[in-house]
Length: 381
Image (tube, rainbow, N blue to C red; front, top):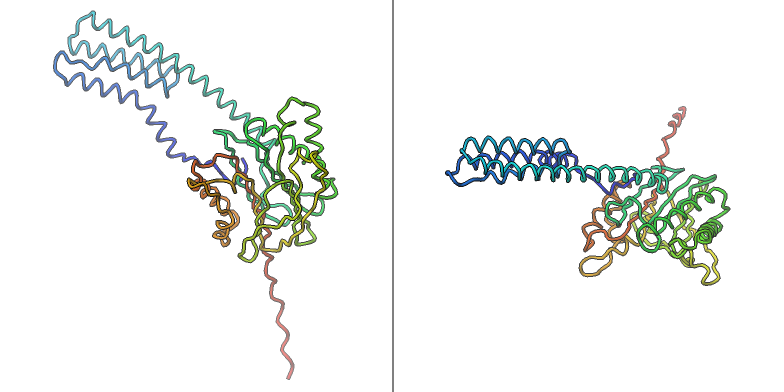
């Protein structure tokens, strides 16, 4: 999983709910039996014993559901003897319980098959994520990387936002992007761009050439499969290069939001004077790529993000004040900033997070203080 932890289940809470679900059929049978025994003659609650196998079908296995159904039938016989019920009434009630048990077993089998298929799908999704969106190393070269990634689709692990960071000779190169739209078509386009990036990132001479290779990769894929969604979608991309020998950051934006730079406790948007068009739209006009270079000193931070962050709206329709929020967290450790951002976005959004969200915090750690040298010898008198 990418770092950033957008799903934090509570193991203790999950275990409590699961055990309660297993116990519910027995609690229901016990309550029905007690109610039937303490009521006056002629008032029977034993018809409610069908609740046992019905509840068992929701949480128990097929064998467990069958066992609880048989238990309810035995309990009905015991209550019939205790209440001296007529034989015809007892047989009729047993037949009803048998029919409900058979139906409950069928439902339990269908649920079990569905859960098994869902586990298989989730396992495949885990593998796909590790291949398409690989976990980032916490440190590359001289910088730290902290990632937040949340897919908008329910239960999805991959969306239309994508990222990659690679150690290349002489520095580190980073990509953060956002494909138009959502769903599997956006995931397909993201995977194409990630493949093109990984193929070109180490030998492209500069960011401009790397952007051209991304454009070519998307166009080539569209030519191979013109009916795919990838041929129709565009993507915004921000490319970042951090050389080892200089404290600067080189940036190239293909229609992507400008990052935020934190320096000396101040947060400012990095000025991108001449951004390129989004990928797959460059054919609309002559396109040239302009690379910006800004200082990136020890102790500085760069926040790269997609519009799922900046365009989250509250109930009044106001956009999320990202720059203002980031100023509040300038003194927070780098690994705390994105969890705080995730929590704040979830609370701020009128409908939670309804778009894919990706944010990458790049930190150049402060240089360690120089060790004091040996004391100078005292002058002779």
